[in-house]
Length: 436
Image (tube, rainbow, N blue to C red):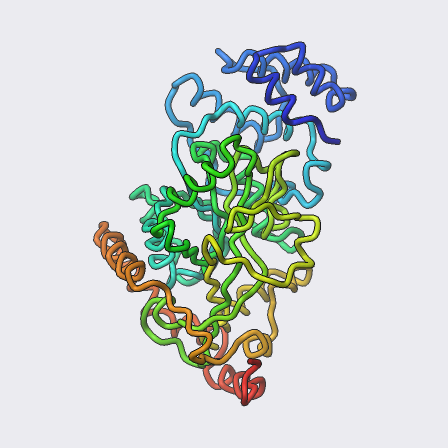
């Protein structure tokens, strides 16, 4: 069951118990006592003492954090492990599947008013060799913080992430997963439903560790300038999300991983109509579709050229829109790196087989490097990324841990797939002329 979220938000802003009760009544029909407690709590926010709600641990942790923050009691630490018992956060059924307490917690989250511009929400597993480049890239663009969800890392990146968290570069969560729900969907559900710190940011980009946003020249590689252009076009704040279409980088089906940044190693790409999104956090109900947001009624989803997009027909789209920027997607990379990706997907279990790509996909989804598809990242942006990587490496402990991950890459690869076997897979699946 759903409610009129905008009406509930208005009642909350007016501190009106009567209006709030009217909106929440359909949810509270079977729980009249819980309805009384929620209405009393939300209409008189912030609470001055303990409330009378009986809540699951997930909702209790969030609500207590919000209350402490609202009262000025100082920060209360959110749990950094997301247990399997919280798989309901995957939000497979969308808002229709939310229970009373999830609706109430979402409304309580609405009491936080953003004071900062933009953050990143992402998931990582065994991505340590790319971590500093990815962080540096988005820091150069002006993103202020990172909320990273990991599961079962075995490449040494847990230590590097913990070190960067100590330096307040990012916040990291351990997502305990099983075969029942997609890891990304659960992580995104946590970020939107249980993470008060995300509400400090007006905008958030939901991107993976192999996706690098490159804004159009008019925006000077700055997310703040892009958002300013968006807000000038839609001053009534009707725009709730922006889609950045993939630019799919190919690798000439190279076998061996070479040194250097992704943006320097791979400079040839082809268009792709799938996208990831930048969203106004207050306007998002769910990210269960991963690529596309589910927004509040009346909120617009735009393409990167700031034109409205019909999400009901988004899967029919076959033409990419790059007017406002591209999302450079470094999916194939080298065959050695693909083997790490494949092993990562295979370990998720049968119900997550969509992540376990067969070796042949490396060649099927790859392509040749030709003059006509040369799409290098702007040189000035690469230079800024190098400088930012140097600043991150200068933080105590970071360089040592990052270098340790890089040196251990061959060991990790051999553990997942012996070299002779991997070579055999390469030659058995290789397409002599490539797909393009």
